[in-house]
Amino acid sequence: MTLNSSEIRQNFPAVFTQAYLNTGTAGPLSRPAAEAIELWNRRQLNEGRSNFSVYMDEYIPMQDRLRQQFGRLFNADAGEIALTLHTTNGMNIATWGLRWQSGDEIVTNAHEHPGGLMPINAVAQRFGLTVRSVPMPVEDTDEALIQRFARAINHKTRLVSISHVSWKTGAILPVAEIAAIAHRHGALIVLDGAQSGGSIPIDVKALDVDFYAIPGQKWLCGPEGTGALYVRSEAMADLLPTFAGYPTQKGLDSEGHYLPVSGAKRYEMGTVYWPGLAGLHASMTLREEIGNDALYGQIQEITATCREMLEEIPGITLTTPEQHAGLLSFSMEGVVADEAVGKLAEQKIIIRSVHEPDLLRVSTSFYNDESDVLRLRDGLESLRSV
Image 1 (tube, rainbow, N blue to C red):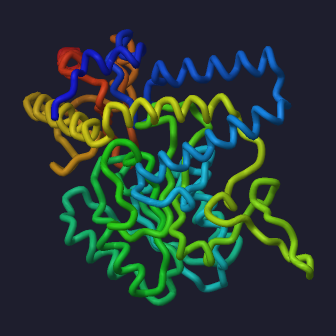
Image 2: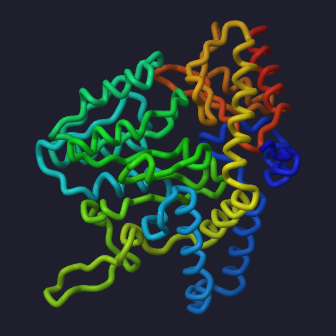
Image 3: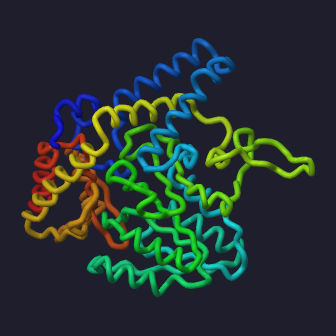
C-alpha cells in the first residue's frame, strides 16, 4: 500500500526546511506531538501541577493507553511494558536487574551502540564478569553470524545483549536464531531497538526475546525523554527492580520485605515529564491512524529508492545488506565522512557519520519522498566535484 506522502509530510514541518535524513539520531517532532506538549505545558502553567483529579483522571489513563500502544507495537501484553526515558534507560534496567555472580559471561558484538555496551561493561567491572564480543564483518551472511554467536555463547553466558538493527551498518540481525541459541544455554537476551522500534515490524513473541528497549524520539517521532521496555512476563522473576520508588512498590509484607507491583510497571521510575508522555502518545496515535504496517511499507519503498540512487553514483560503496530497515550506510571514495556531513548540512541535507568503520549514514523514513533523495544525490555529487 502506497501512502500519500504529501499528506503525511504536512504533519512534520521540519521536512520542508531541509532534506531530513537523520531519523536514526532523532526523528522530526510530529505536529500532533508538539501540539499535545504545548497544551499540557499551558495547562500546567495556568492550573498548576498538583491537581489530584487531573493526575487520576487523565495522567494515569494516558500512561495506560501508552502501554497499550507499545504493546501493540511489540505484539505484547500491556502488562509487559514499562515506560522509560530512552533506549539506554531500558538497556540499563534489563542489564543491572539480573542476579549476577562472579564468572558469569555476557555476549555482545563489535558493532553495538554505547547505549547497550556501557551497561554491560559497567556490570562486568562491578561483578567480575566476562564480556565476549562477536566480530561483525560486513560481508558476513546471516548463517555466518549465527555460527559466530553459537561459538561465543556457552553455559556461562547469562545475557546476550545486541541490537535488532545495527546502528552502524543498518544490518538486521538474525535475532530469533540467536535467541534460540541463548535460551538453549539458559541465557537471557535483551535487544537494543533504537533503529528498529518504529522502522520495521516487531514481534517479540516470534523473536522469543526476553527484553526489548526502544526510544520515543527516533522512528516514533516523539519527544526526548520517552521510550519503552518490553519485559517478557516469564522473565520478570529473573529481573529485579534496580531502582525502587513510589510507582514500583505494592508495599511491604509482614516481615518488612519489599513487594513490587504486578507487571512491568515495577521497573518504572517516579515523576516524569507529563507533557512529554502526552506528546509521545499523540505521535503514536497518529501512526496508528495511518497504519503502522503501511508506514513500514513506506519506509521500505523510500529506502529502496535511496539505495538505487546511491548505487548509481560512482565511488560509493554500500555497506548495508540488501535486507534493510531504514538505514543505509556507505563510504565514498575521496570523501572524509565527518567533513561530508558538515558540507551537506550547509546545503540543508541532514545525515550523519559513524566510525569504526568510518561511514556516512542516511535514515529514510515514511515522511521522506523522492525530492529528499534527489537533494541527497545532488549534494553527494557536489562533494565529488570539490
